[in-house]
Length: 87
Image (cartoon, helix red, strand yellow):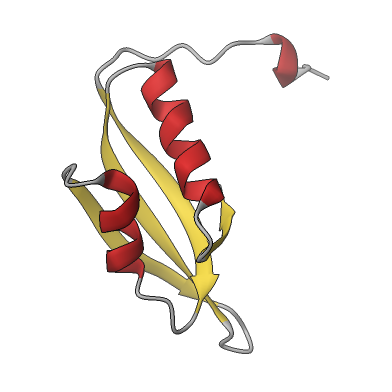
């Protein structure tokens, strides 16, 4: 079996990157994205609703410029109080 932790992801920057976030059903995800991305152009698209309807998932796609940018955006999304999970 291949240990993926030993391999670094190689990307050609800048590139389009997609995050999936999970939020409570009543969360205004557009406002959350505006808060996190501070005016950066991004596409937000609802992806799924949980079986009992408590959670919704969204795909967020935007241009990232390097590894640090991509990882920092992940940290900012993960730290936001209205986001329950980032994939």
